[in-house]
Length: 372
Image (cartoon, rainbow, N blue to C red; front, side, top):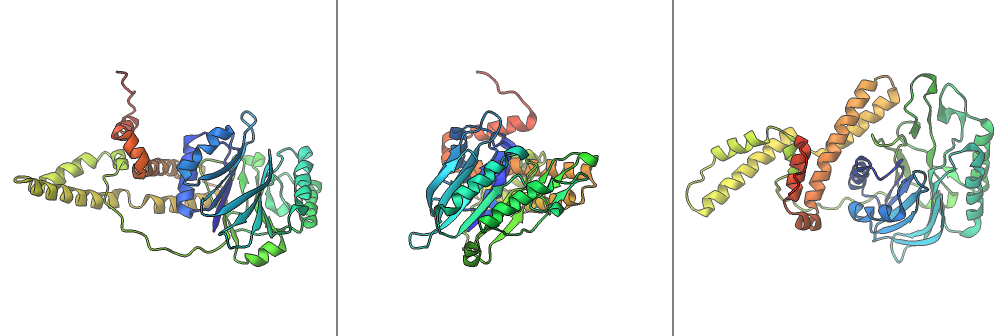
């Protein structure tokens, strides 16, 4: 079972939603926790249908600040234990017959002087259950100086306080794979700060039960925090159904589409009965699929490759132009994938009809919607 934990820095932005959607489709998480949603509870809950995760708990943001949400797949069982402005504490069962375990999703106080409130929450939650316990989220604090990449050192006392509360709660760092930080303030020179603020910690009981659990630092062009991918269990590979050929709206993002269609149609025999025309249309679709493979390839695979490239560039930190180019290319691919999945959504397609096509054509050519 996978989980995604992300300080998304505002999920009211369509680019962020597209990237979140791409992450969910790529990693198939059963749990998704977002912090700093910066929008109302009702707007956050509307994302359930976009993400395909029907369970949701959310807390309103305070204006443009804060806000948290937890989404989950309907095939797992979630019982709310408690929640507040900065945490959601739940009991998790993967099936009715499985033993429960406990997950707390947290968004730590951003101000150093208020961080004791986060530690008090953990201290208070500690004794509420004896089940195996994992805590995931943005703690807004590092454990050690080597997790803080900056010319200015981090306060030793504040890190010591963090380590002390983890020890008191028997919570152990789960480690990670990926870049060694999860937050980058994107500044230059001596003002640049990169630090590991987001992590997973768990009791020994939980680690013994899920001894193959792994945390990955993913990358995103939409937030200064890395999304965390937490793999709790290795999911079995299922057999995928055979894909059906579709005319893809995202093809209209490429100017050579019209020439491809004209050439393919000219090469088919279209005289005769409807069966001949039907055969010609199938031939055009075959040509379009071949053209799409060369022009577009797999959007998902390209996105994963670009995420890897972005992680390498961010780790090196010495080529801002290349980083901007990768981010620009990722945003274009995310937009294309959004078109693809809007088209795949049967409900949306039946409701909207060919208005989707008109919308994306206007988007491509920068035209204003005509008022009738």
